[in-house]
Image (cartoon, rainbow, N blue to C red; front, side):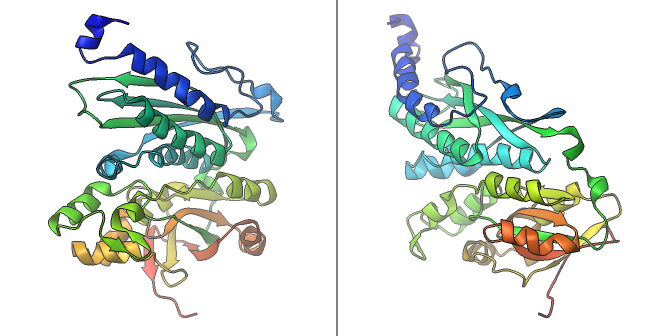
Length: 338
């Protein structure tokens, strides 16, 4: 034990205990390519065990943002890890790649081993859902930088795809169909506004909302789409994928489209989850702005040819036709007669 280090606010013993507690969770994520256990100076992964002929590595990094503040207040820490994996793995998926391995960086004000274990339990669950292995990570105890009991987390994910199968905006064209995949809720974007709405209206996180509470509904982890979308990618020539994150439809859908193209979205093609209507009403937010901020119930969108719509829908859990690609840039959200 380092007494002087302990006096500065850093506990080596807590760090050692945290590592021991998380090992069983990390072990759940082992896949074909994972070569090394945690604890080394770097993580090793064997790409050759996969059937790639001309592989390209695809990487992504992200965090969870101020959604963390809700986890602190509710003292629920085993879902945030799912969020950080989802934000990275879904981005890689949007390139047409299969997530393979993941690393996390966790910075804490004070190392409480049981709290660290709870966070990493969520990371492991997210990796199991995404089919990727945890090959390493870092937990940094930073007294005086973060408040006692608070933390920040970021993730880094690497995947691979055949070079010729990487998705490109150049594959999209007018007349193609946009398939929507339902979100599990607000996911991990827009929480600075969410928290302002709650504060401005003196809304408690423990206030009843449907069969749950406002806090638990908002803390619902981001949906990970990897397994169902990989099924589609194996069977259908997908033209583009958009991960609907911060900036909503208006920022993210154009990222997968060729220049000059846009999307007409039929807003009555699906049911917007009640949590978004609640936030819109309490925040006095214009509907158009809602679609510029939140995912509005659609976490991912696939662009496919018309002849592939039925097959695509049959391979997805709850997919639906969201709209169509048009020869005019921008996102237009319309009410369409059925």
